Length: 111
Image 1 (cartoon, one colour):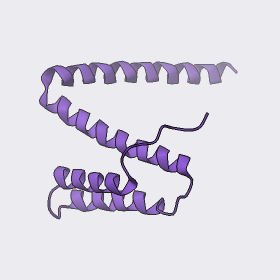
Image 2 (cartoon, helix red, strand yellow):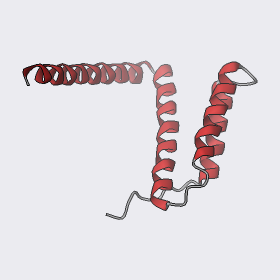
Image 3 (tube, one colour):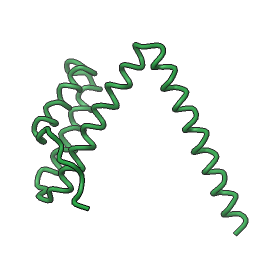
Image 4 (cartoon, one colour):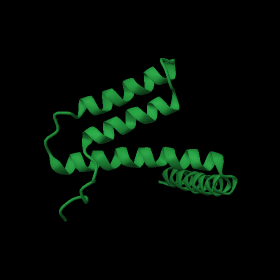
């Protein structure tokens, strides 16, 4: 397997997209905005010397996923039908995780 498919956006474009999103979420110099900008700078800064193309593609895909998740979240907040569907999915996922966690704990007690 050759690794993930290349992401069409460059790291610099993704960095700028993330900063634009921060500006949209928390405009100005609010504490929330400063914290989010610091987090974006930190995450991109600690990986700026990465040379492995496969790792870079994985990190770029993660950044795109984060941006997409936020946009979906915002859409769900504005669209009642989508919001209900997202809440139902989240609730079902939580119940499944709780069930699996309980099974694991019970399995540990039996062993």
